[in-house]
Image (cartoon, rainbow, N blue to C red):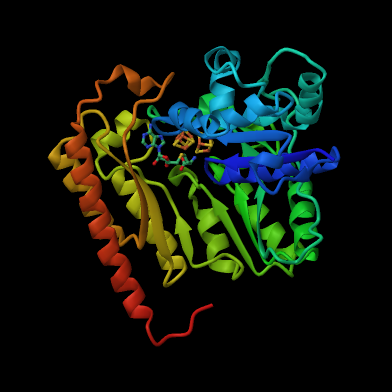
Length: 389
Ligand code: SAH
Ligand code: SF4
Ligand code: F3S
């Protein structure tokens, strides 16, 4: 029996893809390898959202180079966003790679591995399924060990924030049919899953049809209501990542009405400066963000928020960063993912000089983390002695 080893580098979407990759392989008769030395297929599922993606991949693949020398029949594959972004070019730069495969081509993996094992040349398959999007369904669980699961509701991203590579590595937005989503959640819950996280790059822009005319502001809220109603066994329903501009009244009302939604939302803001939000093409102002989360917290008392923040975006001044800290205080985020801006290939922000010195980026990130940690401790302290689910 063939054995595989999958190593994952990226976001939840990437983790989820790794699961689907493993399912496709198991469906083709593979079993998981105990370690690299017993694997017939080594697959690296990559991320390119921040710097050094390719270096990380090189060093990971480099660790196993000796295995390839010992066993030429070992197949080495790269999947995920670096694969999608570089395609054929990656094969040229990394001669010991056999297969480069994009996120939409996962079902073709076993076939490509056979092609290599039959002596075929290295191959790259990175074609988006824009015309007829496919969503790989999670198989019903046979072991009840896992109580949480991801379910994809949309893929791709049309926002084009100027710093971000995701629209290039994941293509344009494609939405999954509501029936399929509900039936996947329901199947998982029957298999023992208690918490589901709906996944999408701008998950709350979900709507049921391909056409712009099918889009109504309440589509995503209606999807949440449908899942809650049709899968009563589900104990908690999360979603990530929402875009602030789609946090509309219908969604806020769903939060107020549905106990299955947690009293927490991760809502990436990226900066507390309007000047920078504009340069990032985030399509909202600080005031609009604050207004939306205030309305949400009014509808769901006790709801906490976390966010993503980028420091050192081109042109970020001390005053801009001060505004970011001010927003963190004002909203009272209890947790935060902070990143130093890193210029990415193909993105519009490349035209702007990466002009904030590395030491300044470091210092700002540290200041941001220190502030959030203090808010988090205060929040946790306030919960001491209470009973929480
Ligand atoms: N679609 C999600 C996640 C995008 S990637 C969203 O829009 O929220 C996750 C995070 O990585 C982003 O929220 C952003 O904070 C960060 N990020 C993306 N590109 C980056 C870059 N070029 N440099 C630094 N951080 C970046
Ligand atoms: Fe990237 Fe912006 Fe799309 Fe998020 S919304 S994936 S940050 S382009
Ligand atoms: Fe995710 Fe990284 Fe791709 S964040 S979408 S794996 S670039």
